[in-house]
Amino acid sequence: MTKRLLKLLAVPAFLAFGIASAASKNTIPANDAELAKRVVHEIRMYSRYTIWDNVNLRVQEGNVELLGQVSQPFKKSDLQRIVQHIPGVRSVNNELEVLPLSSFDDQLRLQVARNIFRDPSLSRYALGALPSIHIIVDNGHVTLEGVVNNEMEKNIAGIRAGQSMSFGPVTNNLRVENSPKKS
Image 1 (tube, rainbow, N blue to C red):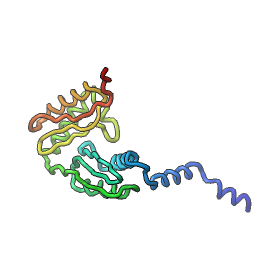
Image 2 (image 1 turned 90 degrees about the horizontal axis):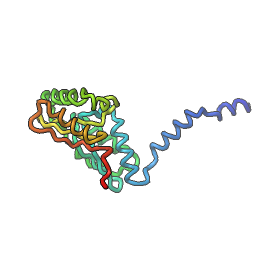
Image 3 (image 1 turned 45 degrees about the horizontal axis):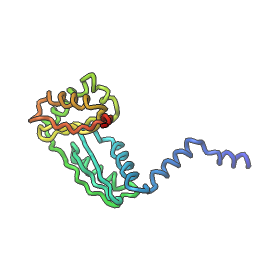
Image 4 (image 1 turned 90 degrees about the vertical axis):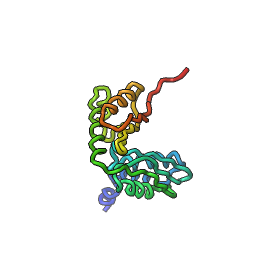
């Protein structure tokens, strides 16, 4: 009987860790910064969030505002549902814009992505599960969102995107992660 009881009490470490991590997902974040981190994580884990989408957010006293663009109508409602179920979220103001459904825009997205990610200095950005460069196409107008490592990569991405059949100039909103310190 004692051996049997010891076997039951000897929970494998990976099971104990799984239980602990599941419990930590259900805890309410201590502040808005922690809540924002959790919301960003859940959005990035959404399997249909792609480089064609750009979701930003603001969190104030547990109230989450979703901003940006998504490429399909169902993504807007999916993301709202995901965020609403995060512990600590009081309300969700969903201001996500659904981009027009257009075969021309779809072709332009692919062309811009090829131009950017085939460049040797930018190809490493295509390696991740969710590249940090997002390509937003709205009725033939291209906007680049996201983060790159330096100013040169930002400029090259803008040039490569501009080599597409877009209507008008490319809006390059890429942020530089390692900007030089001003003295």
